[in-house]
Length: 238
Image 1 (tube, rainbow, N blue to C red):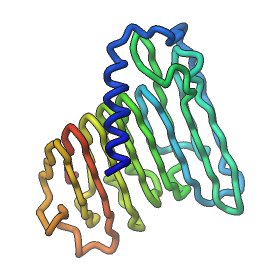
Image 2 (cartoon, one colour; image 1 turned 45 degrees about the vertical axis):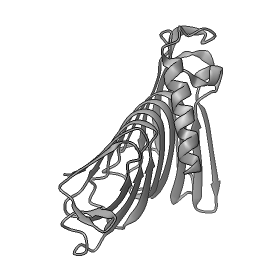
Image 3 (tube, rainbow, N blue to C red; image 1 turned 90 degrees about the vertical axis):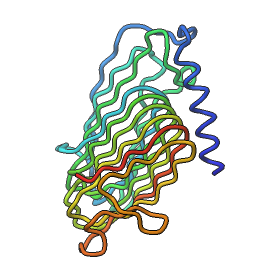
Image 4 (cartoon, rainbow, N blue to C red; image 1 turned 120 degrees about the vertical axis):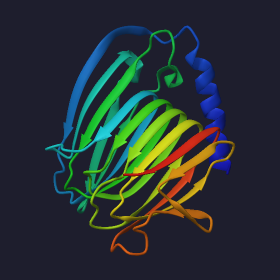
């Protein structure tokens, strides 16, 4: 609850700043960068994405460990990328520069398009401030997901044909979260909407959780913990 309260405060501040005129933003020409990270000796990776404000897209089908395209028009928002390998595990961090606390407004833009390797087991952590995120994760070999969103909208596609189960945690602030899950893989969702609304079409209630028809029958199960603040949570079986 404490972390959710902090996220709500941050989200409120970020929302209030979106209407500002961008004073101090240093808005200039759009800059476009592309980066590619090779896995080196890593057989698995923990990927930590930190974006203060903007538009984030995450998907699969990368030839490298990660391939990213970055577009921004505030020089201080140049992303910082760090990658280290210890043994057979890689640790990747992609973090937005902190110019003016990462606020949108006054024509400021920040857009990331990141692709990950489908075959490398990936534990994905995403911290998103204000903005929109589209996480198309159905082709990835996920070992875990931890998504923290502040203010805005997010869509998370977990409809992959996963060979192993994993735990996913999605914590939302002010906005709307849509979570897509597969029909052939058992899914159990614990959802707490706070002041928002929970839409769970295609699920049935089982105690304090929502489960799909495959839950309890399939060899693989996904456990999803969703917490929302002011907004709505949409659970959809695909």
